[in-house]
Image (cartoon, rainbow, N blue to C red):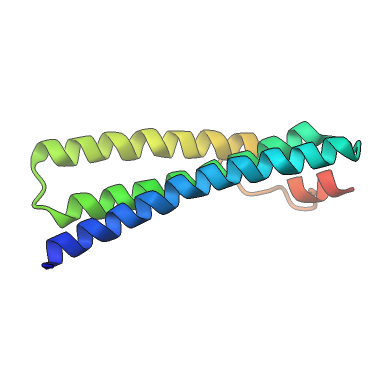
Length: 124
C-alpha cells in the first residue's frame, strides 16, 4: 500500500466516523428525549435540539476533515479544489447555523459577561 492509498483510507475512515457521530448522536438524542418525556421533565424539546445539533456539528466537522484529507491525497485539479471549496463553504454555513441555534449567538461572538450559558439556563 502506497502513501496515496493510505491517506485515502484514512479519509474514508474519518468519513465513516463522521457519519457514525451523526447517526449515534441522533439515536442517543432521541432515546434521551423519550426518557425525559417519560419522566415529565421540562424543556425536553430544547434539550433534544441542542444534543442533536451538537451531534450534527461534530459529524460535519469530521466530514469536512475527511474531504480535505482525501482531496490532498491525490494531485488535485482546479475542479477538485473548486468542489472541495464548495463543500467546505456549505458545511461551514451549516455549522454556523447550527451553532446559532444551539448557543443563540454566532461562533465569533463572545458570551456576554455575567450571562448564564445555555447549559446553566436549562439545568436550573
